[in-house]
Image (cartoon, rainbow, N blue to C red; front, side, top):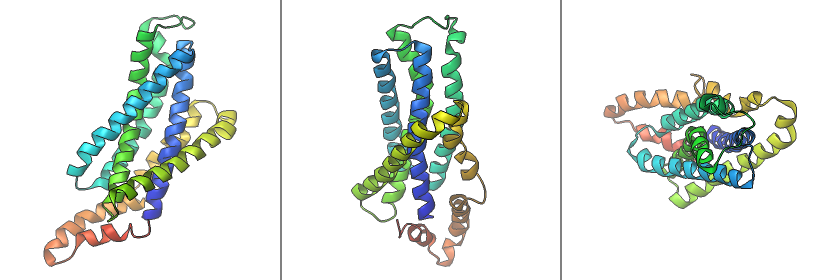
Length: 225
């Protein structure tokens, strides 16, 4: 389970950078962008991601089954990413704007915010959920944040290199979303170790009255992290 969680955080980092670059490229084409427009897009991404980290950090403590929350956030990220990419391509059609017409700063801000919000917000929330899972394994909070950030950063570096030198060269834009979105099927599969553990938590809760310790398995799976 520990290895699968590390892999999930690693893929979260790789998926985040791929999603960010793909959406930025599409929005820059639609906006006929310059450096100022690019700065607005990046600012919206950082704002939405920080909002996701903050919001999930406030809510995650009140949730009992945090692994299930992590899986749900992961699935939501995988679902909304293709829709955000589609919206980044067709927003001018919806707004009745000619394709070659550049947009002002005000519409650039709001359009990019709407496109980026669901993807960046859920990606930021994934970081808070993963960090909380680490901290509840018995580690100090600072160490948990550091290890989560470490694996996500490694995934971000790998995802950026893979996108630059492989994915963008050989795959059309919608097929580049295979890496960020295909994990939805794996994580939602009943055979996935995290889902098997989530199903066992209900059985552990029902047997806790017999003197068993349902939290023992939860802590044991993180011992090697």
